[in-house]
Length: 371
Ligand SMILES: Cc1ncc(COP(=O)(O)O)c(C=O)c1O
Image: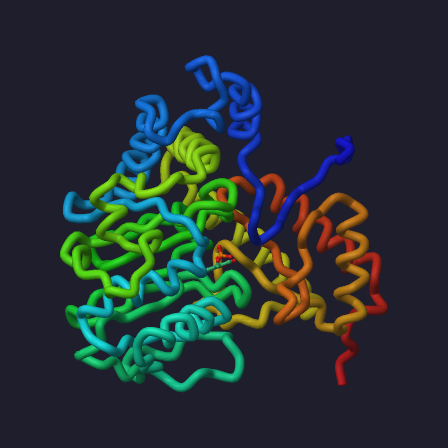
C-alpha cells in the first residue's frame, strides 16, 4: 500500500490508533529486538521471549494494582473467545449465569455463553440501549455461577458509572473498550477481560485477570486454548502465542506508564469526552447523543445529526475528506461514532470538536426548525 502524506486522525473503534512512539519503537526494533533477530523470529520458548512475556504480564499487574490472588492471562481468539471461555471455566459453579444487557457486546456474550449454560437476564432486554436500569429493579439469581456485564458498550456508547453489587457471586466484566482508561478495584471482580485492539495494542490477544479460586475446574469440554488453569500454570505459554503482538502490547503498557499510568489516562479521557459532549450540548440540537446523561461513555461516543441520515452522510463525507478516519457508526446502529481510546490526544478531539462546530455553521439547511 502506498504511503499517505495526508494528516489523519483515526477515531476507529478497533483495531484503533496505536501511540506513534510505540509504532516508531517497533519499527526501529523490527529487524533486531536486541538479540540479533526480529522478535517475530524468536522462539516462544526462549529466554528472550520469556522476558517480553513476563514484562507484559507484570506491567498489567503494576498498572492496575492487581492483587496477589489474581492471575493475568494472555489468550487468543479475541473478546469473542472469552465470551465462551468464561462459561467453560466457571461452569463448575453452577449451570446458570446472570447477564446484564446494556448493548451489542453483552448481548453477544450472553448468546455465546447460552451454548454452555442457562442464561438469566436480570431485566428484560430493552428495545434500545440508552441507559442502565436501576440496580434495585434487577433480578439477580443467588445461585448463578457468575454475573456478567460489559463496562463500556463500544457500539452503543453506554458505560457503567458504578460496579454492580452481586452479594458474593463472582462478577465477570468485559472491559475491552475501557481497560486502562480509569482506575478500578480489581478485588471486586472474579474475571476481567479485554481484547487488545482498542486501548492495549494490535488485535491478536485478549487479557484476562482471573481470581485464583475460580481457576482449576474447567469444564471437560473446555478447549485447551480457552483453559484458564493451563494458561495460569504455564504463564500463558500453553501453545505458540502471537509473539509480535505481545511485544507491541508490552510497549503500549510502557507508554501508558510514561503518561502517568492509568490515572493520567483517566484524566485525559475525562477531558476528551467533556470536549465532545459539550460540543453536542452547545449545538442547539444540531447534534444529538442517544444515551442518557449519567451513562454516556467517556471512550466511545455515538452521535448523529438530528436532521437525519442524509445529514450524517454529508458530515461523514466531509470529515473523511479532511482526514478524520473511521467515524462511521457501527453497521448495526448507523450514525457517527468517535472512539477516543488512550492513544487519541485531547488536541485531536479538539480538532474534531472544531470541525463539528464549523460544519454546523456552514450547513444551516440541517438545522431543525421549531414546529
Ligand atoms: C466491548 C467489546 N467486547 C468484545 C468485543 C469482541 O472482540 P473480538 O472482535 O476481538 O472478538 C468487542 C469488539 O469490538 C468489544 O467492543
